[in-house]
Image (cartoon, rainbow over all chains, first blue to last red):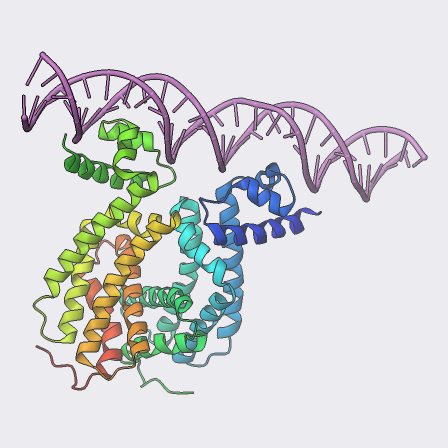
Length: 197
Length: 197
DNA sequence: GCAGTAGGTTACTCGAAGTAAGTTACGAGC
DNA sequence: GCTCGTAACTTACTTCGAGTAACCTACTGC
């Protein structure tokens, strides 16, 4: 099997097993076996167990970025921008329930570099939100804008975890909850009273 | 050395080394050596490496609960309640910068039971916030109240991490930021227009 | 002065990450 | 239609660290 295809397969299998059992409890031999290949192949392509984990996170991150970019491209005002971005995120999580737990929870633990990958995901989010604020209300205190972005990301992540325990709460409702809490505080800082498009 | 004292010392050393190097990169031999004792003593008192980690988290959790309880005991209205609780949290984080990274990031990774300990911390927080809302606005939708609590906890955690990158932002300012964003959305649901005590 | 136990150690096992060295499949050039 | 190079793969290790068995020692109450 060609390299690219094999790597993709390895990532898929690894993501699944990591999510099932946790990073620590999973052995490279086990992943190799389930891929149908021997352990050194994993090392050939990913360098280390940590490298494999990072590969999983990186792929998810890329996918999330693309979906979000597509979702927000049509927004015309900051509220819509934020809402569409949040919705894209929650939908992504909803589709990846299992892997999500892994990427968020497991990754953090082990390796500094996996940590960085995860932070990269958050960076994407905070940058996006920061950009919304800055473009629509240029006179906002930059530090406060940054804090706001972090708050929204934190709230969103937490609600994503919560969503898993509350099956009745889907992406749309989760988005509403975040917007309800967070938007009034922002609208007060906007130049015009937040036009509803 | 008596058991209780030795255990406390072990926790202190473990917390420090885990925070420095990460959970995975730390060996039990290393911790034992720095404590000045042999490895089986760690196993005698904590059962496993995971047990040791959980011990660290548990101790921090207990301390946080006590500080928070003390801080909010004097609050007279929901806004003050929330503000004092947030402040206590940020101050706790501020005092434990190093350990904080560990408890939040490392714990998640490894072990299901460590995960539970960390969730226990969040549970404390969400329960507290949920209680505030419920007691002051009894007619709120319970699911929405829960969502709100999760949002506040997520926002707070995220801002705590951010605080470490922004040394100028201390507990007081962090509390303000969270309140600024989050409070207007809640105040709208309160029976009276949120009296400032 | 002796018994029991709290606090401690040395010296192992075992499993999993990571590696060295070698093997097979297969397309390009003659 | 053979052969050379390389991409894809394997077997058989080494190494390191979690966890354990078995044994030691000093103090405390009787």
